[in-house]
Every structure is written in structure tokens, then in C-alpha cells.
Amino acid sequence: MDPLEELKSFLRFPSISTQPEHAPDLATCAEWLWEKLTAIGLTASLHSTPGSPVVVARSAHDPKKRTVLIYGHYDVQPPEPLSGWTTPPFEPRIENGHIHARGAADNKGQILAHILGVAETFRERGSLPVNVIFLIEGEEEIGSPNLEEFLREHRAELACDLVAISDTAMGPGNTAALTYALRGIAAMELIVRGPARDLHSGLFGGAVANPATVVARLLASLHDADGRVLIPGFYDAVRPLQQWERAAAADLERAAGGDEAIKELAGVKELFGEKGFTTIERIGARPTAEVNGIGGGYQGAGTKTVLPKEAFAKITFRLVADQDPALILAAAEEYLRAQTPPGVLLEIVTGHSGAAYQYDPNSPDGIAARKALKEAFGAEPLLLRDGGSIPILATLKEILGVDSYLLGLANPDCRIHSPNENMLVENFLGGIRMNKILLQALAR
Ligand code: BES
Ligand code: ZN
Image (cartoon, rainbow, N blue to C red; front, side, top):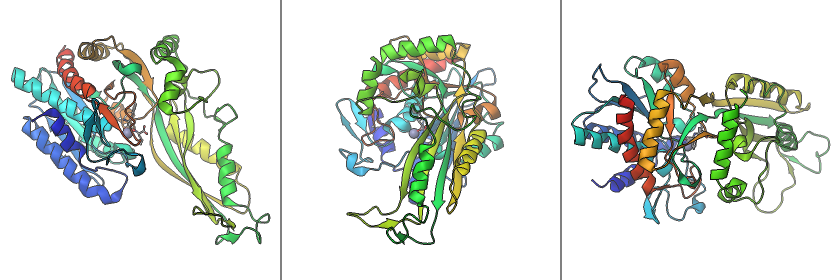
């Protein structure tokens, strides 16, 4: 079958992990993968978990060969806001060399590139140069709540020499890149509860603490005017940037076309961030606190003079090595509680978390990964630190004892998590080539 038609079939599943009503779509998407992996000659299995199924597939294992575990996720982010899409998110279409659909670049295009790279190698050589294990989960976008336990239970059968992942981006200008660091993440929601019910803002305003105002004050207390996080101890464990890393970041900044290109991608007129660091460093190498959502009180048309009974905010911290997500959440909670005025109750619910991940891009497997990228895309890959997170990476290292090499395929303008997500068809096809070369290069 035509690789693009196969990709379209994969993209038609609305496998949105955060919306419970889509559980059946996740299940059928996992079955589709199981069939695909079985059809290319692997032994595939579907494992149910309290959440979405995990798909595992393995080639016949030759004990003399090295073993590569390929990780990916078939779940996607919600497509909302739907009004931002030119065509419906789960009806893939190809336009100007891009395939558009939710999940195209995060992470279905890359998963299929892995699968087709393995399939073609099989077809052409009759065997694989390395043993391959696929581990494809359906809960990455919600912080992989069930994968750690799965890894612990299946640690023996998942034993491998390294992990290969294409769930990151190419470099600026869509050049080849090996990502050697990703930020970690720690999520929390804060809910401020005040009066027993919404009150008349004239009859009570001024005499009762307003939960929406309290939320605003708490959020405002997270940063100074330059965007530096004010939570005591927040930066204590941050591993300092090496000289070579600052040089690599400067190379990247040049390749990216400086701040102008980043403004263009973000759709802003000015950038804003912590003093003393370049934009590339702020994104890839510095921890942050971001408000993801805020709400409470009257949201309808016109005005309503009300003092809301409660308000909330959702926050995620992006972390770098060697910050501990649990310690950061605890420090944040203590800081926020200390500032909460009397008369309201602050409830803090912590969400998913995962530590930052970093490895040596100059290790023998790092060199092999760079060779595969170079041969597939025709340029010496840049080394980059990216700002996104794949929360399971630190756990893979802890449980399987191996490093994860991040061979990104997403084009810089892929709009993952946004409306009109897309993947360059060229990157998808180049990804198939890259995987074929990678399998050879890792055989050593
Ligand atoms: N594929 C991304 C991570 C990514 C994208 C890393 C581009 C580097 C460059 C992944 O699917 C993702 O979105 N992760 C979430 C994790 C969270 C929901 C727990 C993230 O980073 O927000
Ligand atoms: Zn994602």
C-alpha cells in the first residue's frame, strides 16, 4: 500500500487520550497498529492497562545482535479549538507537500516511518541487522500514567541496548537534528474557594476575599517582571550549561535566523523571557512556570455583577536536569499557601510529572544516530536541547538502564498541539530512509 494512504488511515482515528469518550477510538487505533506490526512480520501483542492499551511488537531475537527498542505514542492532543482548522482534524489531507491532521507530527507520522523503515529493511535483506522491539503507548499526552508499571512488569522482555525515538523536531529551517536534552514537566491545578455561593459584587464586594482576585495574585507571584521564577529554591538543582552547549545554542540561533524567525513561528511581535539567556537557551535549557488555563466567575455575554465562589488555574512547570519534579511541586505549594489570604481555601491538586532527560550525543550510539540523520537528510545534524517533554524518558533510563536517542522528524512549523497540525511529506519519507540507515548503523 502507498505509505501516505497508510498514514491517512492511521490519522483517521481520533485517539484523544485526555477525553474519556474517546477510549474506544484509542482501542481501535491500537488494534490497527497491532495488525500493521503483525503484517510486517513481527510478533505483536496488545496489553490492556487501566487506561489505553500498550502495543508491543518484536522481531525474532538473535542473541548475537544488539536490541533497539523503538518508542512512540499513538494518542493525540485534543483538536480544539476546531474553528482554527482549515479542514476537519481527523480527515487527513495533503496540501503543498504537507499532510494535515491532528497527530500527523505528534506522533503518528514518525511511528509509521519507524514501522515502514523496519518493514522495508526486512523485505530487502530478509532479516534485520538488529533485534527490534516496538513499544507504542496511548497515554503520552496525559503523562504516561500507566507506563511505568508496565515497564516494571515487562522489564525482562523489554531488555534492550538503547531506545530510539522520533517524537521531537528537526532543527531550524527543517535541518537534521539530534536532540540530546528534553525538559521535564510537573503539573498542578489550584482551586481557590471562597463564599458558599456566587455573591452580589455590590452587596459583598470589598468585605469578602474574591477567589478570582486571589488566583490572579497567586499566579502573578510566580514570576518577577523579567520572567524569573520566584519560588524559593526553584533554580537550586539546575545543572549549569556547559560552554560547548552555549556554543551549540549560538549555532542554532544563527541557523534559526535569530529571534525574528522564532517571533514569526510564535506569531508575536516581541519575545519575552528570563534575563541573561538567549531565546534558544530559554526554551531548551531553562526551567519555567507556565499558566495553561485560568477560569472562574461569569464567562457569558455582557456583564454580571458577581463575586465568584471559586476560581482555578492550571499550571505546568518545565524542568531541566537535575530538578526533582516532586520537590518543585512541594516548593510551589508551600510558596502559594504562604500567600493565600484568610477567608479562602486553597486546594492544590498535583497532576502528572516527569523529570528532564539528557544524554551524551557523542557516545557511540549518538554518533550512529547522527550518521543516520546525516545520510537520510544530507546535512550534518545540529545538536539541540528542546523545550518539550516526553515524561517517560527518565523512567526508561531508570528501569531499563539505557539511553533514549531522539531523532526528531517534525518540521519546525508543524503546529503540534495547535490547529492545522501537519507534517512535511518529505520528512515522513526521509524518516523511512533514516530508520533503515539507523538499523544498520546501530548494528555496529
Ligand atoms: N512530542 C511531544 C514532545 C516534543 C515535541 C518534544 C517537540 C520536543 C519537541 C510530546 O508528545 C508532548 O507533547 N509531550 C507533552 C507531555 C505532557 C503532556 C506530559 C508536552 O511536552 O507537553
Ligand atoms: Zn504531544
